[in-house]
Length: 310
Image 1 (cartoon, one colour):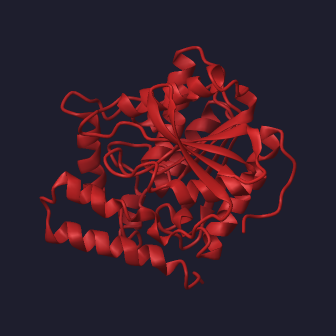
Image 2 (tube, rainbow, N blue to C red):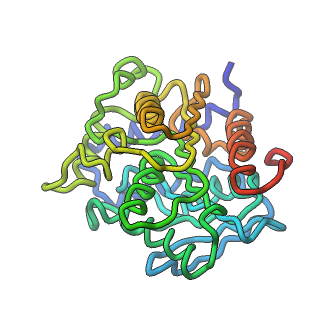
């Protein structure tokens, strides 16, 4: 049975959906202000400093846990449909993840649509990855990527673009509730329609149109990694809620990775909503997921086992 704390994200999402239904033509700045409160439901990760930085020409935010391994880095790409969200909305949730893993996290403040359409976010994330390698001197085997929702898809497409550019692959990537299909063709858009409080096919289609722009191809592998050749990518660990309409995106992404010979683990969490990780420090389900993520990635970053996140 879901914990009492896990209901907080449902309450938040229901409020957003009601506001969007009441104002279908909601101005973009108002929509973004609404999503700016995403992180309000996340507990503050104690002992994690936030430091803004220019990462290869891209604004970014370091989340630095006290006593962490400074030579290990999580490159984090935030969600929000490529239209909303920021390094600020995700400071706390990625701070919890960095603290659990015991390393620094660099949260990318990539350009958003419609001001910058595809492939702007991909190019910004790759620029940050290159900056870590070339300017910060971080070994690729000491870097892992993670991201949620749109940022989960971006955690994969960043690697595809990096592969195109001949950059070395990092140790791993960990998409959380990834959005990986711009066309929203997964069956769970029907089967989970009454369970997922926030994400509908209509919302996905609208954000995809904004992100791709008039000339964009929804089947472009750098936008929809369910259509990508994932051969040569590092190990992938996907976490997703069982009640999500985007569940099939995770399933298809995992199957695509298997077909390409990539090591992949798909972890489905019962009764959980889209990016339930925002409940870190509030709901045991989120803390458990983050602890599992940390246990999975630490050995791949050359770190030992560690206590679960507080």
